[in-house]
Image (tube, rainbow, N blue to C red):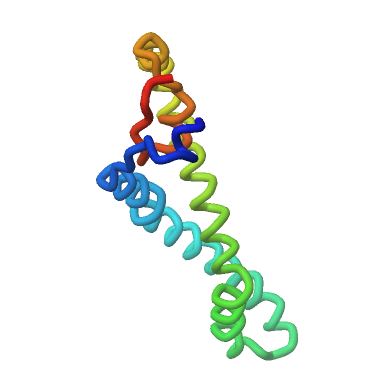
Length: 125
């Protein structure tokens, strides 16, 4: 791990770009779908409650303000974190099954470096 604090580590930009794409851009469909469904649920619940007061016209404003101001960023962060964490866990599990972790240890590399700093190319330990 000391080589990452020093100057001996190489930084691989294509791998960093791949990780950024996996964590961000490819999470957009699931984040959009979950946000849409939560907005629909909020609209249905809000319409029932606002109907009692005769204020059904404000359902769109309620959903818009609630999703944009209050819940939008939090939901996107939680969904992206859960999806990304599950993806990384599946990749590590696949590496364990395919014995890639043992191959890295045999070659003298630290496997945790490849998990934590996927955009870096470590020297041998």
